[in-house]
Image 1 (cartoon, rainbow, N blue to C red):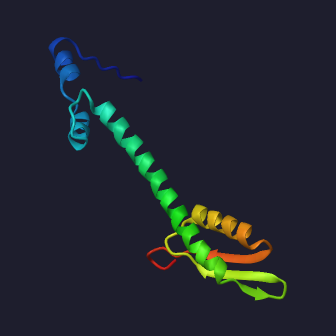
Image 2: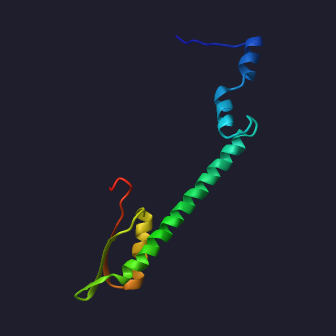
Image 3: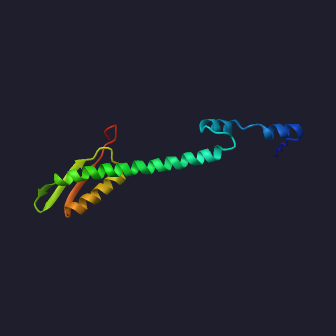
Amino acid sequence: MRRIEAVTARARSITCCRPSTGLRDVAGLVRGSRDDVEEKVRQLLERSRRLEKEVAQLKDKLASGQGRDVAAEAATVGDLKVVATIIEGADAAALRNAVDQLKSRLGSAVIVLGSADADGR
């Protein structure tokens, strides 16, 4: 058994032309009108992506800046240089970049870098 519903005449025009509360709410959140909400959301997404890239670049700079100090503190064990330290605020990508920079500066070395988040994990 199937059920079919239809809206006709005046009820259709009320349903069709009634402002969407969801769209109106989103327009209010992005400080725009219903007409320009799509463009506002597009701009916000672009800004968010740009800021995420900037944060990643700053984390890389932070990790590589600390990596320069760490290279000078490398201990020598036999023929190898050994570096083991914690770099604050670095994510996995920043740690990889710091290791790459340390490898290029130290040559043959054992490098162990770690990072902890605000919870100490």
